[in-house]
Image (cartoon, rainbow, N blue to C red; front, side, top):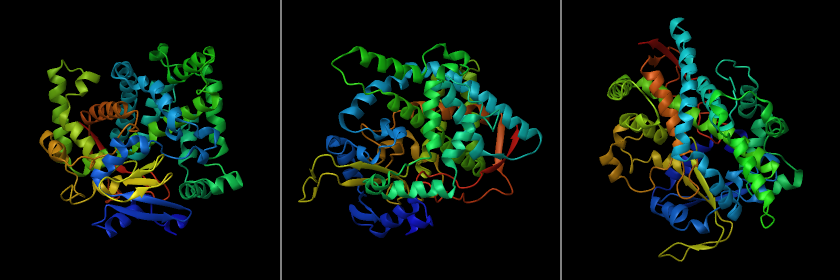
Length: 456
């Protein structure tokens, strides 16, 4: 009933179940219409998500996703998913990421100018809002080749559609509850229920149809993500032996996916990171010193290659992802019956399994004093000693997030630009500890993250 009345968020509910059965490797839990098997044992997570991936290759049954806007990479199953991921993954090859750095840096410069105004007028920043707008602009430039202008214009069309997606209205809350509970799709089929507002669907289909009319960024003489998918569709149309997978629905759905995933998860991690740095000034100063040292060692230049030298920053980002994993529950579905090695237990077809990412990241057996923000957990030595599959912020196995490298480069570029110019401290109205949003499955702050900012 906590789910129905949004009294506690998904992360909290799953963590209660996880802690209630400390010695169990597997726990069944129920959410009204849906039953799930919680995989608590890291070794078994590796067996299911990696070693026996072919038995658990799907996330959500396609029958649950008849919405036109949900025919994307995340919701595809079987061979369709394999084909689509193979086609889309070149978008995030290292060589491709290097060409995106200038666009990310351009957005970071705009962000820096925005924060400078707050510093000079002694006004706090809302790290949550400002990072949503920054990551939105990055996605616009790098993925779609469009100027979203979310930082310069908080009332821009794209920021409004982002707010529509995030809006905690009764309608949206009800949609999220039903989508979470009815994972098998009975209710959705019976009432032709849609997971998202029809306005979102109309917006992204129109974005696809009118994409050539939008002003392109200077760096986007190269192919953008939309055109990349349209080219794949044209290749399919010219091959009579191939089915057309990249239909208009699929392309629009993937535009929606990369838009939402691109700003929601990365902005959440960045805002939590600034929050922790404000609370831990010694860690903030150490990153700042590392940035200056690396810049001075490379003729005061920062680019995608130089960012890889920021070892301590990488540790800080990793610790942020451990403490605040944006996706607290990794889900799979048994597509072929599976017997746990050395036992008589068999997972029947269509068993829903879930790895409790947040709970594992906060388990004292794997992380001493887990509520403490401690980047030292991610030194090379400590990484080597870590039990496998106890750190999975992006998921694990073949269905791991396709844009991990892009997200990390974006975060490093942003932090490098801001921390060498500004000092962040708690504001007198900063929530300590931060309050987590109850009505959302993603792990994100409920209200603003207010921070004081000072120019260096």
